[in-house]
Structure formats: structure tokens, C-alpha cells
Image (cartoon, rainbow, N blue to C red; front, side):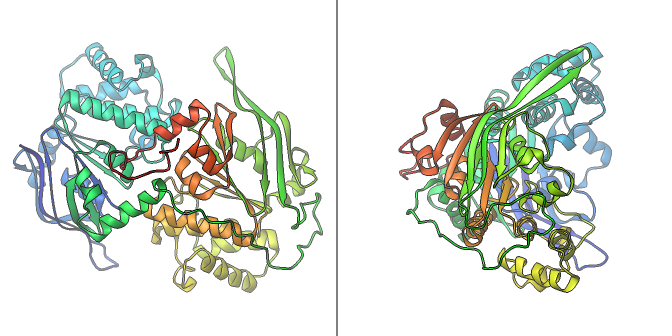
Length: 564
């Protein structure tokens, strides 16, 4: 029996200033009773639009312009708001992409469960609380967390709470929109396993939307591939792996296969910077010479945070005796789960936070001693590429303005010279011709294009070190490969050092020369990237590797983990 059936479905965005945009075109999709169907495609392909429109959660200017969406045979596209309200949560529920945005930040978790239950039932507060406790335990969260507010929970726990909230009234259909985006691989795997176990126990149907092909293949019975608003391929998961019907399906699989299937070893390019000495006037510290291979030395680094809750004080050791070096033309990857201390190390290296013990030496300079102008000058030599391209750029400023600011602030360039350099940087990151992008605002760019602009901005001051903090975790698998290739090429060509922060060991293998595995603030494994992946020594490294979704596990295809 079909729980949800979408027939010849069309969705159009109607705007006053631009021609109508067809986001979903003649889509047909069926989710049967007790089935998990995955909907995969790149950003902008229409996945979320189709899912939200099918259960009538589409916001203006999006409009359903054709077709039907049947829930148990009833066309919900024509139901009134009151009829829809009676269906939602009780029969049809959803888990939205941003768990922090889905939960009300000003009331605790208990109140959010109680409100949802009492909206559709006559349960008392006590009965609703007991029900909430039962559902939370189903997603492996202790009932004591009901008293917590959303900001007091980790990303993985917030997403589990959202999953529990969607199941609290035992619906027959659940829509999951990018439920694991931005989560580390261990948390992602536990949530997907939890989902599969609950679905088998309770029997609800699922439509899971994601750009992560591995996650989709991990849990789905069938997979639908969406491209440019159209569903171009629908098959059982294993059949899709072996015999994709559409060229776009093959392209997605090839992009993901690059992470898993070993390729020939390629030598590092020993690129050199363009000649020309950097002016040193006004600097209160001595940067490393361009000919020195080691740019930064981190030795026995330690950082402890103290926090107080009422009369109780506690400490958290975020970084514990960490040592490494950053060398020109080489990429060092820092790998670990959320909360392992990766981003704290980035803050210590950039001077945002002060470390308690150990040392960070940039050339001959101890970073902790820098103040005022010296610290500002130091930061021109060390730049960051942030995780989320959607929030890394000021939405009110054009691409040109974002690129000219660091050139004017750190290089002292005039408007004409800064504009010319900005155009060069856009060309360097593959945004060609630059004239198409220079005057656009961030909302006019795709996620991959925005991240290219972020990379260009980071390289604008001609830094010695680039810190990339999860630069691809929010991007599609095909775009992810492009960004990694750009970063790799720029590091080799400009001969800068890079610290690549990620929870994904496979992308670290593709990009990095050296991998450090961080667990609870300590480096538990460190060495050549291919050696760490092929012969992991620490149990935690094994855990990270085993948590990565591997759709090729059941096929006769050798992967990078076969030697592990």
C-alpha cells in the first residue's frame, strides 16, 4: 500500500521581478508502507522543494502548479489548513535540516514535547511527560535531558530530539530533510542506525532527503535521483549502485567512488611563490622567510576551559599536549569528532584564544606574546576558510567588496589595484569569467560558488598559512570534490601551508600529506595520510573509519579500507 504518492507533480516559484522558475517538473514518486525511500541530488536540484510541497509545507513564492500528492489515497494538495493541522505530527511528521532552528530556544525540551502531545491528545502534563521520556529513551537519550534547553545539547543530541519529537505521536509517514548534514561521521552513523531500528520496530514510512549519497545508501530500500527539478532515476539501492540508468546517477556515484576506490599515487607539486619580497615595515614580529620550509611549530599545546553552573565549577581539557609542524606546500589534516578539540586548536593558532601551556611559534615569534598591531599583522599571514559558505559572507556586500576588504586592510591597495587583484583571485578559484560574479551578492551564488569566494578571500592577503575548518561538510559530494581539488592546487602552486580540519578521514586521505587523529583533545595517531588510513593503529581511528557510510561494501569493488 502506498503511504505517499506524488503524481506528475510540478512546483513553480512565482516572483514579481523574474520569470517563473520551475523547481519541480513532472515528478513521480511513491513511498510504500514500511519503506524508506532516499531522495538524492545536488543543492538546487529541487529535493527539499519536492518534499516540503508534497506535505504542504512549501512557503511562498513557491506554488504547486500541477499534479497530486496522495496520502493514503487522499489528495492533500486540496485540504484546508484545519484538515492539514489534524494530519500533521499525528499522521505526517518531519525532521528539518537545522536542528538548532527547529527547536524553540527559549523553552526546555520537556515543554516542547508536552505542547506537541497536548495539541493532538487530551493527555495531562504528567502523562505527556511520561510519553516524552519513553520516546527519548527510544533514541538513546536519558529522560533527565528533558529539563535541558536546546543550546545545552550537542548537535547530535539535538537531532535525536527532533527525531523523537517527530515520532512522539506515532505517525505513519516521516519526512527527513538532510538529517545528518554538518554532523561528524560517528554521530551520523549512530543517528542513521537509530532511525533504521525505530523504523523496523514501529513500521512507519520514510522519505529521507540528502546530498550525501553514502548516508542515503546506508538506510534506504529504494533511491530516487533528482536533477534539475526532475526525478531521473528510481531503483532499489543496490541496483542503482550496479546499474545506474541516468548519466547524472553515474556522475554522483563516480564522485563518491573517488573517496573510496584507490587511485594511482600522484607526486606532490613543489610549486614556488611568484618572486617579489614582502615589505616588512611596520611589523612588530619577524615572519618566517619564504624559503624556510617550516612555517609554524606547535609544541605541547594545552588549553583548559572553566565553567560554572550555580555553585558548581568544572573544567574541560579541550587540548592536551598537542604537537605538530606546518610546512610550505604541504597539507596537514586534523581529524576527529565534534568536541574533540579541532576548532579550539584553530582558534589557538589564529590567536583568537590564548593557550595555557606549550608554545606556538610562527617563524621566530611566539604567538602568545603578540598584542595589538603585531597580532593584527600576524593574522594577515594566517587566514581561514570557514565551514558554512552560507554564513561566511556578508549578505549585504557584493563579491567584489568581500575580496577588496582584506586587500585594502592588509596590503594597503587602492581601489583600482584591489579590484584587479580580486578578479585574479576569482579566476584562480575557477569562477570564470570573473565579470559574471564580481558584482553579485552571496544569495545569487550556489553553495559551491560561495565557498570558492571564501577561498579566494582567504588567499587575497597572500598568507603563509591557510586553515580550512570543515570547508566541504555542507556541500554536495560532486561540489566537495571540486573544492578539495582547488585547495590542493592552490596550496601546491602558491607554496603555502594548510591545516585542514575535518571529521572525514576519506577526504583527508585525498587531500592531506599528513593526518593527525584527535580524540578528547589528545593526538592518538599521527603519520602519513595513506599509512594512517591503510594501517590504523588506534581504536578511535578504526571507529572513525568504520563509521563512514560505504555503499560499495557489498560489491566486488576494492576500497581504501580493504588493507586496514
